[in-house]
Image (cartoon, rainbow, N blue to C red; front, side):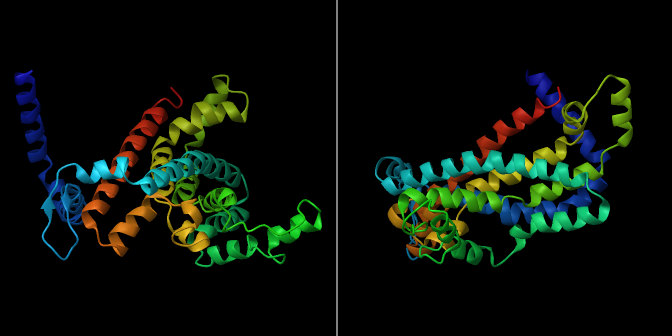
Length: 305
């Protein structure tokens, strides 16, 4: 084993010397990435083991922050439950919807396809999206949803969609799904445009007889990079939900019904300035995203095999 490790290091060093010019051009990005991403992450993990309030020097307290999170912080446990519920529902569904919409839109004529892409991507870049949904879920009789339900005698009195704990999570899921057509959707569109058309001709000769077989045996295996990118973006977005809950339900929301881990992180980091505790929350969120991403990558490797 030791000899194998030494030999591997020698091969790696030889390859680095052979492609030193490539590493030279990559050096500026690698330096910036290490400085602004890797270094802050390491510092955050260190502070998660300390009692640090910005004004006083950090004091090492071991795993006390993590113990408090899981054994004494009921709101954090509630936020974990809400986050995983939102991620479990909106992540996979949003990912599949983004792919299916991209697949259907790709079949449209070029001019119509460009307009359709803009329409489906608009929610991601729209700055007034929350105002639209606030009007839609307004709690008085003039709210769009309440007016519709009252008109058709489905309900008798208006419902307070944005302040009633039993209704808030459903509203959040709807809004997050509507906004989920983001960068992953564009990646899927680009992937469809770059597919080799000769593969479909070869598949026809090999016995593929319908579009679903084309999708499974040709399209999905050919789009693994885009599928991976879309999965990473979907995981990141689903675990980082925070702006939607703040804009629609307030901060904090009623009975913390849609309080997420990121909301809890902002509460302790940006409002209470308990940076050690906030760093522990950030570390747990980071590890959850990493392991979820690993699981999704494992599943995507099985696609088309």
